[in-house]
Length: 263
Image (cartoon, rainbow, N blue to C red; front, side, top):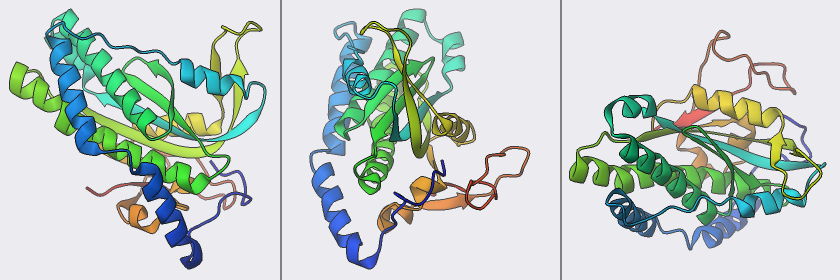
């Protein structure tokens, strides 16, 4: 979402190396091979009935509670499972439920490994956010790197278990990401009331995800504009006609640009 230039700092030659070093330090503990190995171990046990997933979102609600009735900058991510409708028609109910639980848990685990929070689960989609008020550059880069790891976890962690060991259909995912200011709302006055995020970037990210191809990541221009050049090089601009995409850039009045992964 376009909210002005005050925090839309781009990478320059003077800051690129500094930010790159910060990103590497932040992501040093996120090892894709470890994520995949842990996923396969949990998935195998779950399908055999020997593992139960925990879907608590207390950390997310706790963070948002401190910002109720205020507006904060967030990187919003929608991760949508592809093909779940077909699975409901072909798999036993207990196996289908286990797979959805596994998908939700593993995506949540990956988000947390990158310093993000899962807001909620909506059907077969996971909605997450990364606080960006202090460092938008780092938050956007972490969100994109997280999305790449989520695809890796599904391809190399979940699918080999489903396909090779159980002959179940493979999963795929499509991910949309954008950044902007959002209002934090609590639906009640007691502390246990649900807290949610409302804002233009929530709406636009949902639409971005709906236009994304399986196993691809699509990002809004506000995210693309401030990514580290090395990460930015993995994206290409997507051309949509006015019938499919009607969101406009508030600065230029032109269609808001989207970029999707090449690989």
